[in-house]
Length: 176
Ligand code: AR6
Image (cartoon, rainbow, N blue to C red; front, top):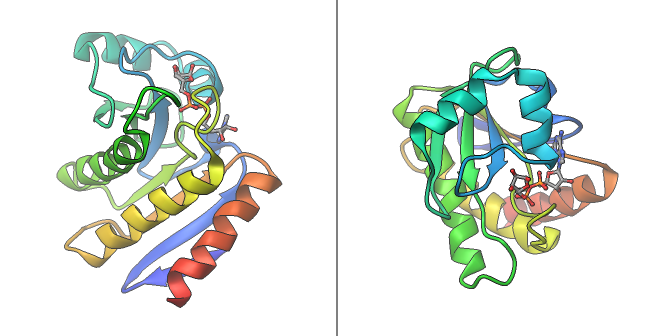
């Protein structure tokens, strides 16, 4: 599914984010920037050891923050490591919004034209997918309406159910 926001494209895909050839893919990271399971595990396995080595040099990021590395053997050129909230730690909605926004800002600062996001925090960190779709899509649409060099933002969802939740929300957000 594709939608337009001004001259920008917002696209939803069902698949593995490590296969995306956008300038950057976003990792659902932790504050230590240690690549564990889920999206991070797939990035670690397919991208090779340089990504973790770069993360180690950076050392960590705050919850709601983001950091950028190269992407090793992946098709994308960069990995943006977005630290989403762990459900139950408090102020989760704001932190997820900030993780999304800081990733988009980091993409702009690095003159990237395209970026792919996963549904941050909705796996191991336990954040509800519906709320995630609303927060991440609203934040992205708002950013695409502001001054940005990003031409395309993709949400790469893992499985039909997650895709449908995002598709439903995107339809509502773009018909308002
Ligand atoms: N491509 C796209 N989406 C995926 C993929 C994939 N290859 N694999 C999983 N998902 P998660 P979190 C979906 O657990 O909840 C790690 O240990 C998944 O179905 O990757 O933010 C990190 O190192 C879910 O909808 O991230 C952190 O410690 C979404 O991506 C912690 O997990 C996010 O799931 C982060 O947990």
